[in-house]
Length: 135
Image (cartoon, rainbow, N blue to C red):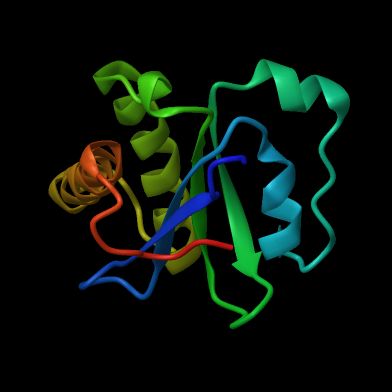
């Protein structure tokens, strides 16, 4: 029996934006739950399935049409501090692009990077005590 796909959803309390953090061996499940931001289907190649240990992409949820960023990790062991920090910066840039904000004033951008990294760390430490979301 395969492990259930873990998709954890976080609503940003200041900015109108959703972050999803997902862990699964291959990214194929993403196209079942999300579309590209322009609502086109997400397509992964066979190479995508075996190469990426982590990536970040802007998505739209199929069920509620929510816009946000998905941070994908192949496993909890791929969720190192370095990788979480790297992907959190990508996600923060996506959020700031979405709201039309400049990252130059620094502090708001650094706050969001920290918040996203904290969401990822929470998922990394999560022990299936409560079901956040899974599809």
